[in-house]
Structure formats: structure tokens, C-alpha cells
Length: 365
Ligand code: SF4
Ligand code: SF4
Image 1 (cartoon, rainbow, N blue to C red):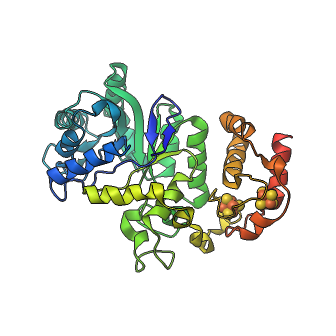
Image 2 (cartoon, rainbow, N blue to C red):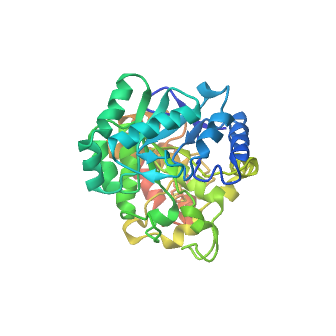
């Protein structure tokens, strides 16, 4: 397993986490087995925005004896007390549901307390005015909540909540269909706006956990993929992990077999993760922008082209840490031989040879 560090904390988070939207679909026992198997194999991050109340006892049972090794995203505004999922911004309903969720999970603390699914500015207003945000802050002061997060599909709402400075984590829907303006229920914001949000998160030390990485399965089937052919789960996971700020991807699982399939990503060769086939669909406003995919490797000078470009973009956007990371690389843009290989290989039309010169000049020799 690979882990990425939460910038506002000490937590090392597994790049593959678990989504629990349908965890209890095959019964709570199968769900618990899936969780236990995932934890045994290094997964340590679980999102609890489930479509079913049964996911909570399943996770409680699956992580029994391992609670300290697991980070849970618990949602303030997802109500399961009726036995089914419900969305609310009402303080009393939120309190009742949080109490119920902790009881089912057999825990007394929350690693990541999430402001749940706010997609409209008006809902954010009622969340704040109704006291739900103050409730999360109080639990944080008491040490019950360790970090505050937000789940949303809307860049504008994410920006507004980021302005408050309370977030350590953002749960956002990231996949090439949404980012490339190819439609889908939650394809909100332009490609440029979405990319700017990811860069802002990285710059401000807010980690991103990724939901809907397969666009609800839409990208995986030939009939529904907006790219004319299906993508694989591994391509979608790699795409999300290449975005700035992303710490973990949370595919939904229902069984141990589902977990096994997802964990296969970690051993998959680069060609199975390569998603450059989407390049023909790049929106005009971001055409020629590096997506850090490293399809242009190998570089004869040994430069990690994707990483050098990521640090450059982040440094230009004001990320001081990115500049320091760049300077600690063994091979920087100054090592470029201007052979033109990357530029000829880049399916996203990036003038990479020229860009290497720009990057070297920006950081100095
Ligand atoms: S230059 Fe092109 S191929 Fe290379 S990392 Fe950037 S987008 Fe990918
Ligand atoms: S142009 Fe520079 S960065 Fe690109 S492949 Fe050649 S040496 Fe590597």
C-alpha cells in the first residue's frame, strides 16, 4: 500500500480507501468481511456516507480490534435513524444521527467530521445558521472530532467553505468525465475551475478524498462512457491520484472480492493505469495543459516529467512547499536535454520541451 500524509496532521492515509455506499448490499456479514480484509491489506481510510444503515454495523464489526488503525469520515447531515439514508441540515436530526452512527461503529471519536453534501449556497447558509457547523466545532474542541471536512460536488461551494479556513479535508467527485466537461450528474464547473480547486487544496494543505471516481459506473461501460470506449477502474483511480491535493480514492465495495479487485491497482503495470486515451476529448480551455500522467516517459535525462510539471504549476499558484519539493528532486528541469521525446509523445498537446526551459528558468539553476 502507498500512503500520503495529511498536510494538516500526522495521519498517513492509504491511497486506496473504502466507499461504503453499498457495503451492506450482500448482507452485513459480507460487508464486515470486506472491511476486515481491506484493513489486513493496508487500507486505513473509510468513508461512511452510505446509502444504507447496515453499513455501520458492518464497519463496526469489520474493524473490531483495529479501531486505532482506521480513519473514519463520518458525515454530519447524513441521517440513518429511520433505517434508511436521509439528508438533513437540521441540528437535532444531525445530533441524533451522529449518536446512532457512533453507537453502531462502536467508537467514541471521529477522525474526520464531515459537513455533509452541501451543493447549494443556500444549504451552506442554513447549515451555518441552524447551528450544525457550530456543533462540529464544539465536538472538535472536545476532541471527539479530530479534523473537519466537507463533501460537495460544487467547486463554488468548496471555495466558499475553504475561505473559512476550517477544512483539513475535502471529499470531491473527481473523474475524467466530470473534469473534461463530458456530462454526468455531478459534472459541475468548467475544467479550469475544477483544476484550480484541486490546486488550491494542495496549496492550502487541504487533502482531497475522491468520490465517484468511476462516475457511478458510467465510465466503465462502452454504452455510457462519454469517451466512446470504456475506461477501467485502474485508469480512473490513477487519473484521480494524479490530481493535485488528492490523498485517497474511495471506490465502493460490497465484498472481499470487490476489495481484492480494487487492490489489484497497486500491482498493475503502468500501461494498465495509463489513461491517455481520453486526450482526444480535452476541453479547449485546458488543451495543452499537463495532466501529470507521465505517458511521455521514459525521459532520457531521468526527469519525472509529470511531477516536475505539478510542482511548477503549484509553485506558480503560490504553493511554497511545492517549490521546496521541486528543489529536492534529484533530476529537475535543468537536466533537460531538449531531445523532444516528451513533446512528441504527449497526447494532451503540451509543448513540453519549451516548458522544461520555462520551468528551469523559473526555479533558477
Ligand atoms: S507532458 Fe503530456 S504526457 Fe507528459 S505528463 Fe504532461 S500531460 Fe502527461
Ligand atoms: S525534452 Fe527534456 S524532459 Fe522531455 S524527454 Fe527530452 S530530456 Fe526529458
